[in-house]
Image (tube, rainbow, N blue to C red; front, top):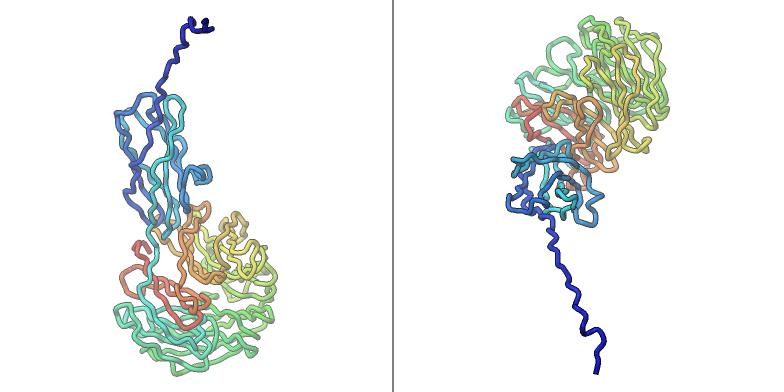
Length: 481
């Protein structure tokens, strides 16, 4: 019997060993700060020469990273090239948000152009900028509205003044940054507070607007011990929405500026230095629709205060340049998007002039947006940048939070109700660096914040009032205020 093909020599199959790229599994955390995370990893010398890394790609995300979503994670570095002596690699990811969890991984390209599997994924948190140091529950029947801080009794410790629906609360500092009790003053209801020496007796008085139809401004005169038993009222315009103080004519006396939210007026009350004030028709200025907040600053560096007012319903900002006698040149308008609701100032780009930031609320365009207006030094602003942030802006304060020399922003927002931190990206924008919410939803809205060194350690704290009677004091644990 013949078997066909049996005399043919079998085909020999050559088995080729293909090296598999080394899988890094020793990526580890070395440190973290409020905005950075440092990692390292080790590549052993024993791996196949063709499989050694020629470049690394580092990616990170605030959600878990895997092979399936690697390309969706953010790239920190994509062409990190080792030197011949490298075996331990160190990388620091920066400009991260504070108090957040980040997932980090790496992969590399080999000498023969292979891609390695992704490394072990590590997770860590950046440090918080702020941490609650004190909490005061004043009662849920109180509706807190505004907060300011100054030394009211001359003991060199900053005290608190809080406006609410049933009057005004004054808390005197016990010398250790704590407030053991609050004194309630009736008949000074909802309103914005300003603190200044109105009568020239070298102690701080309380100025407060009334947001009702009568539109009064009330001054509570300090007796020197932080008590306010004597008051004086004058007209501030129908539904007075805001009040600030400053010396508009450089005579050394405190002047008061109030906004009439329904009549769309700005009214200037010139101080005589003895606790009394006067105004004339030339001290009344027509603004945009529903003026809601105001800042005073010397925008053109001539040692005369100027005024900026956010007009909530006409979607603009009024700029009034001071003449130095309490009157102002014709106003200019900045278009600012819908529902301008908060203002703050600072030299955000370190060019020696004061810039202006407008925050939007109640359906802003886009909701939760900031407009930054750069100042060339003549108070003729031009909008340079806009940024989105979480929440609708209600109040803003400025300070260098992280010690890099640039002015940052702390803001109070609604929807959601919280405070947030925006770190300055060296004059070219802002990064949202964290936000801080009260864990108990019955706290309500965050209508106001202020900055004050209440524990006299040289660093300012953030004082936050919540609508339903709670006061929180946040300590900057990075110790860089």
